[in-house]
Length: 350
Image (cartoon, rainbow, N blue to C red; front, side, top):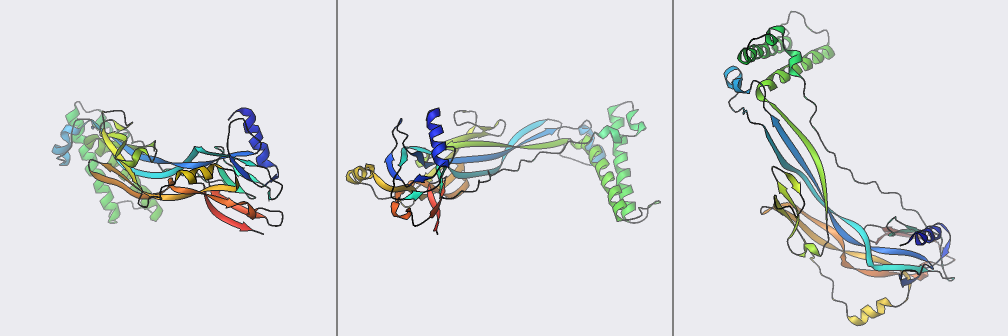
């Protein structure tokens, strides 16, 4: 659509207008309001977590002083899946573009369309839909363990001696916690809040010093979004790829293993004859809308199903007519559409 066309649409959407005489849209013909019926695209949202391990400075002494047998000295970074969700989203269907012509026999005082020209409502306003957001988690910054080291530890002449003294400090912290919790400390907290504050601080010190042996593991979530057309997923289709070392990759990057998506139509619509198709192209009195069908979607990786769900799919449904008789000067009819599917959500009238 050119800029002038957008202005015309905006003006018509804001002003009172007569009811709709629907004809297929032809570029350049803007004698009415242009709208599209949506078609379904599958939106795949993937949350993957990147895990990074950094060895501690005293990792080679973990078994000797803390009896930790499985501490490694090798840094490591890898990815893992956290969440995969598939949902349908509406995009304009270029084969279903229409102009609502003006008519003096009935009235529709307000036509509302989205920024994509998808119909939202007639004679009313559809409240703005809140976009779905995903909670992405990230590890908190780690404490600097050296701030909890005593002067004796910091002045030690070797790493081995520092590790030995640090281990002793860890045991001292543990003993202090036990004495406080048993009520045997020389100076006890005055109340519960003070007790919690002291224990939390000791826990923080112990964790920071222990990580000098065990190392630090940090994680960070990242969101990836892919779009797949239903017709592409009629058979097993590579939606994206995944590598434990590289993370989530586009479908063309062969460095990762394929993640497949498949969409099936459990109740196919009967075939439409050529004669019926020709009739549908003729001028119609009323507003066209979608009745979506349902599709079963699965996402799989290495033979294991990660997602198994059902979606509304406009391509699996039909296009119907909301008759013009609902809109006349005696009846104020309000219609709300689902802009993602083009289906009618609600009809009411005065």
